[in-house]
Image (cartoon, rainbow, N blue to C red; front, side, top):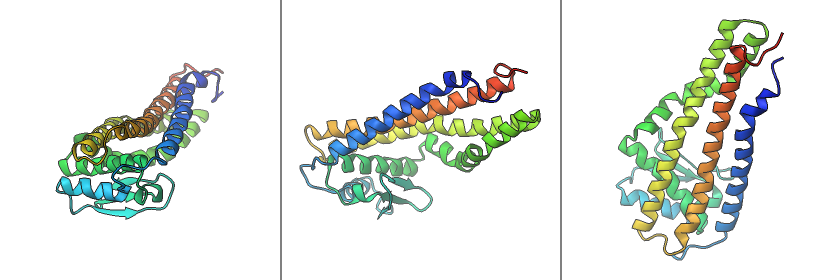
Length: 229
């Protein structure tokens, strides 16, 4: 049987942590998006100030549709901010904008974990979508080579989630340092940024745990530990 109770042993930690992390992100963002920064600067203004302070005038800033769809695109050197961040002068917006600016700094400085993550993005995307199907078909129809191919491909996706952790943690560290160092946030405001960015970081931890758990479950099935005839 492909699905078995042992699946819960591997999947439950990531699922539970993921739900808790998403709840914390929503709670923290809702709270600190309502608290205006003392300087009244929007997320876009924060990003521009920090980029210019680091000599990254060539990085552009654009508003991007989608709730919390904020990201940095290294291919076009564009920092894209969601409407909730781009034009809002809140503590949450400042923290998120600074975090994404941290990725621009990583790119400009050749931060090695970011280079690894960028290099394996195509394979990780391919693996995460196709690998489970290859594994299921190979496992159910006893095509062992196909099942192993699916497991290896899924392993690339797992590596991507693991490499993402230092990339995201480092971007948040840079963000907090720059926000205080440039005097953009003062006093208790940085504690709000801590809450928002720490909650967001937890979602990446949950994703990594979930991916590792799923990979381990596949491996157990393939090696015979979870299959009964």
